[in-house]
Amino acid sequence: MAIDIDLLRGIPYFAGLSESDLEAVGQHMFEQTFQRGDMILMEEDTSEVIYFVVSGAVKSFKTSIEGKEQTLCLLRSGESFNDVPILDGGPNVASAVAMTPVLLYGMTRTDMEELLQENPAVAMNVIRVLSKRVRHFVALVEDLSFRDVTGRVAKLLLEYAADHGSPEEPHPRLTQQEMAAMVGTAREVVGRSLKVLEDEGAIRMERHRIVVTNRKALQELGGVVS
Amino acid sequence: MFDMPIINADLCNGCGLCMTVCDCGALVITGSIISVHETDECGYCTDCEAVCPTGAIQCPFEIIVDDSFEQSAEQGFGQ
Image (cartoon, rainbow over all chains, first blue to last red; front, side, top):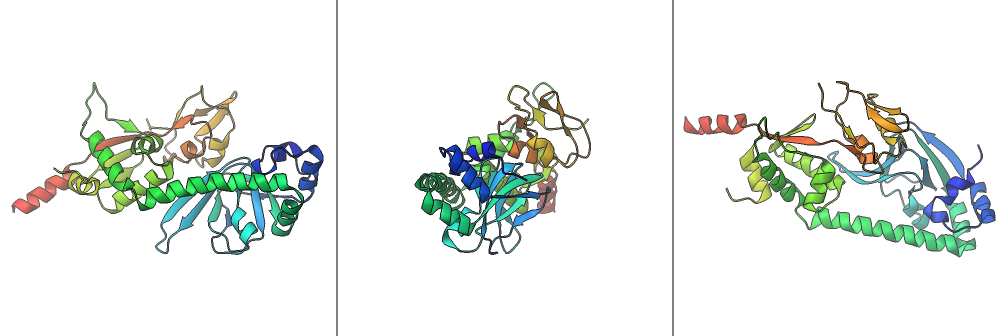
């Protein structure tokens, strides 16, 4: 199937390229499709391909030895992944799974190197994309290493749980995105914090409920003096 | 009645990404926007909220307290 040049135009790596340059890029690309739940990449494996999401959503994540998962980012139309191994020749830095049926454009390492050497505009675009990603990951590292996000989520839940609700005033409801905004972090980090609190026995996650099962444990985790 | 994801029709751009991430068929395109069908198959995974590029889907959690653990712990300590 032919590569859609209009779709290439919307990919930040190829922003500002002329029609003929885009057509040349398209000749080095190939299509790949995945079904929801398919593993696209495994961390530490070797892969010689950079991928661009054409449609659908891909989750990039790391898994610990104990099997705990940390989402690094969600990738949607126009975004690339597996950029680093293509540039440094090392193994995949993260795993990637298709969250939906996914259509990807791929390009091999050799073709990408050739493109970068021939077209400085693409090289500048790559630097911009990677710089933006470094900012995202530095913020994530900061959250996970230096800031006690779990403690702040615990404190937030305590504050909301204090309002027991009534027919006139129902129980408070918060989305994970709202919690993230309230404690100043990313949604991915809130998801991880809730799992930590559940593992500690302070809360229980039910379908659409967060049940505080042990307020004392939550107070300790949140650094709240009772 | 089940609590289901909430759609803000004003923000929905009809891209359908949420529909493809959902494995219970709770989300369907009606016209050019997503609507929700109530189903007990929905496990409230919140993936639809996570993938939505415009923030049009919300999966709010009710925050409640279950004192039974603390009460049983206190009774245990009192014995």
